[in-house]
Image (cartoon, rainbow, N blue to C red; front, side, top):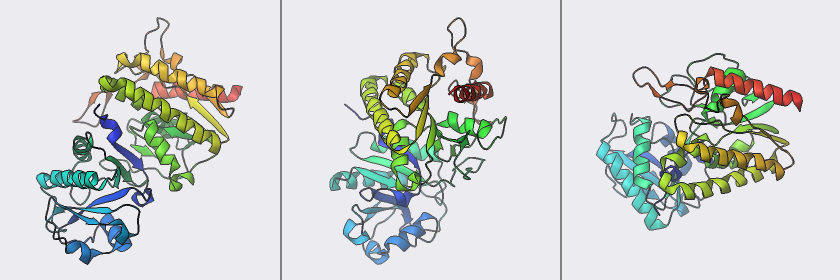
Length: 369
């Protein structure tokens, strides 16, 4: 069975150098290996061996390798040569694709299963992240290599709002975790209180737009992220997992089993680290009506978790998004999303009315308990 595209490339809101030691590292350089700009400077200062890399004589489209025994790590570092001169503006797309193909070949040849990298090509090379992301998926989706794309909390590519990074977003003293709906909730009703708002950042603390359970579990196991954890949590996550299941219906069974295992891993980890955990069931997804069975399945899994862990509670939000006729109340969801010139149908994100409903339900729940 071919691997599921979304499982091969994961995004992690964290510093690249906090990646586990057994993950190979990869980043872009010029053939001159000056490494005088951006994250390349950190690689040069941390790992050196510039002369050793130069002796490999790599040209654009090729990859230089710093073996594990020379960089003091359990896995090697890959230097993807994207252009001839480091100071040159941009690169050739063919060289970019060639670098990724060569990286995949080297990883498979060396038996490397995980590679950590920054958002390659999006800064000094001026490529657009969606295009880069698509090429990463295309290159690695049928390989044995998993790619983790790290980007630090103060780095938001291609978005007009900077990341808000004061204290972790909270609501009534509880830390909030989740995906873009919880980003929106924190901005509107959490400790930032910018209410109402039409545009939102892609990330806010440990909440990430597009985040799924697997990436959240990985993120909060990192040593750097552990320092940001409070004792009490409100979590609403799973919408993106269900959307993935809907998009790749031929792999539905495999995705479902993986999601079940990931959910219980996340629960086990949180139960041991947190004082109280409040899971909020996910709302329906009007844009994917075919997914309702899977939404109900995941919500049942979430509700049943309270029988396994004494410090877990559940707020069942799902029924509140239906009318008296048992139809989805689409007035609580964004109908359109995106900046001018790139507006598209939504039906996934909660609008201000939907966020207000979540806000009131949380207040009622916490007041009653």
